[in-house]
Image 1 (cartoon, helix red, strand yellow):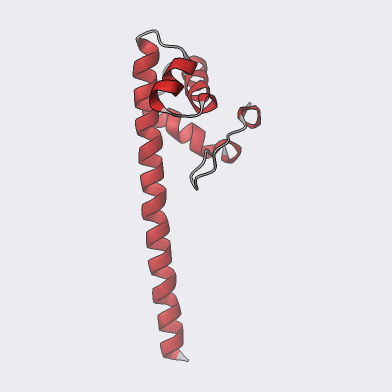
Image 2 (cartoon, rainbow, N blue to C red):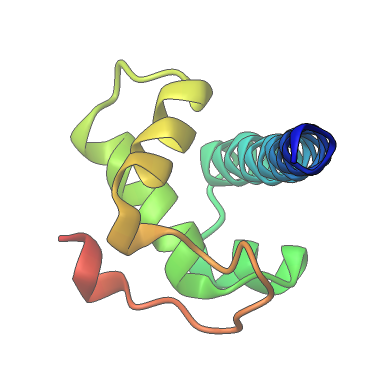
Length: 105
């Protein structure tokens, strides 16, 4: 019984570590998207143009720009974290292709 428990604990730890690594990668990808989108917007590009250029959902880019507009003092990290914190606004961490911007209002 003890060995089974130790194996189960070890397996659970490995799963948690793997999930944490994947989540960190996803957050890093979102931060990179926020950074690039804001740079493009600063150069005068519209959300649709940025989305097309980056091959991203336009709704994701609009959300980034909307947060920046509402919170001009936010850093890129804060914008990404705001998007993550709103669980209804989580965007395709697992490969989903759509994002409902209305849920983020």
